[in-house]
Amino acid sequence: MVLINTHYQNLAGSYLFAEIAKRLNAFVRDNPDKKLIRLGIGDVTSPLPPCVIKALRRAVDEQATAEGFRGYGPEQGYAFLREAVLEDAFAGLGLASDEIFISDGAKSDVGNFQEIFHADCAVAITDPVYPVYADSNIMAGRRLIYLPCVSENNFIPELPATRPDLIYLCLPNNPTGTVLTAAQLKLWVDYARAEDCIIFFDAAYEAYIHSPGIPHSIYEIEGARDVAVEFRSYSKMAGFTGLRCGYVVVPKSVQAVSADGAKISVRSLWMRRQSTKFNGCAYIVQRAAQAAHTAEGKRETRELIAGYMANAKVIRQAFEALGLKVFGGIDAPYVWVKLPAGLDSWKFFDALLQGATIAGTPGAGFGPSGEGYFRLTGFGSRADTLEAAERLRQFKI
Ligand SMILES: *Cc1c(COP(=O)(O)O)cnc(C)c1O
Image (tube, rainbow, N blue to C red; front, side):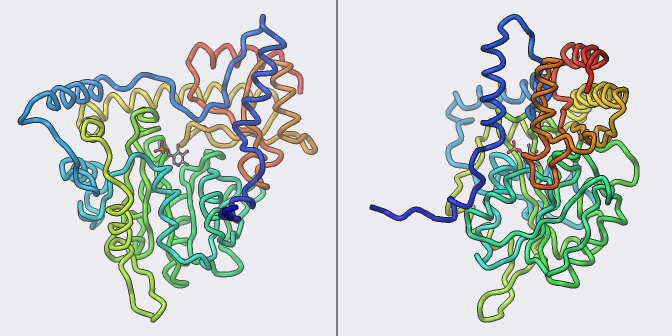
């Protein structure tokens, strides 16, 4: 028999969303007459913006002509999209379009990027967090350092006591919905520079930032270009969760070291990795992504996001009215509810399901420090969100 990658056995047994689906399916089966409202979803629900659809259609029609047909594209992505990204999202930050790599989404990039580093690298991960950072490194056999983010520290991770090589920061955060100010983020950039670490900055929810003084990109922080790689996605920004497109920014100045001490450009390794294992994001999808950067596209995506954020506000207010402490929901579509002391997040999941026929996500699923919290999202429809708020008025904890 063939030996497996035994690191896979260190992954947490049951995947969070599989367990939730199991419990919800059982509930629906046992309560066929009740209408379940799903506020646990981390997926968008509104249709794609009209200008994205138009660009997609145009690109599809091009494929039907001899002149317009495109086969394999550049592994790094088409220049038209990399240049649109640079101009729209990173103007004035000292970056170049050949430091942008287009992909089929941020999950792949965030999951894959670790593989260009040594298996002995120590990895710091905020807790609770998007499960991909932990799991992709556990699969590679790496050691994790958890940085708790809880109400007691205002969800601001403390610098690690022992030096990590790689640091994952997700801002605005999934699942807590919290952000860091420029001054708070600068502490991390300064630390990475002083300790020779590399920061993986996941900015999947950048477009949801509304508060002033919150950096949209880590490259707004002085010195970040030498130590940080930034991940972005069209999924939550423009509704591309099904269409699939994202990108990673890898500045040429980010360096790591070889076994003999020679400095190596991380960008050149990522280029090598991508050109070996990835054959590019679909041309039609890259044209659709380009449309999201036009004036029309920005107006339409702003509207989309405003709708989700209005839902988040309704959810925030409904849980506050129950006397609970609520975080997030201001610069992110996620509302993070602190449960009364002693109430565990799976028990609350069941209570909310039985008592209000509402589904959310237990905080424990996002890491040990998520216990005692509960995640709700603004991604549901307006009608469902309002009905959920109405039901919560009658709900007793
Ligand atoms: C949704 C999400 C992503 C990425 O999504 P893709 O659809 O793969 O682009 C990345 N990071 C976080 C934290 C997310 O919540």
